[in-house]
Length: 116
Image 1 (cartoon, helix red, strand yellow):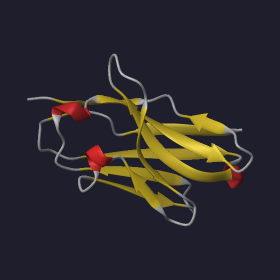
Image 2: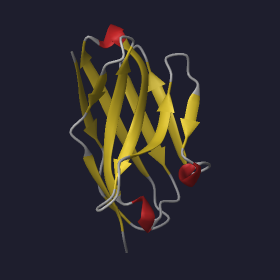
Image 3: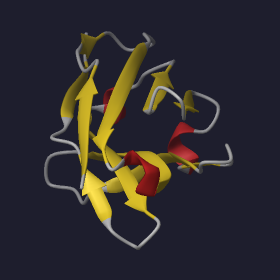
Image 4: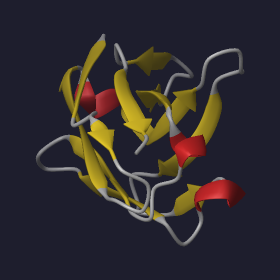
């Protein structure tokens, strides 16, 4: 089992920045890719960014050039640096970890609100 704990969600003004962090514990040796998803009210959960254990990254088109995902395999953390935030980035952000055996783990979510 893997446990994920997110932090960093907050209220921020449009154009501002925020950094989300996710710490993994438990059977972390079984983790392959890690990523961030988000879910806005009335919408489906969507992939924001993902990173493999080797450092390859993937971003949603809507966040390319504004968000950066990074991972520290030794510290067992994955961060999401969010710059130039827009109101449409408002959502609950979830940390995700994919196990090498196909299992899928989720954090409890952290609220990001972009509003003036």
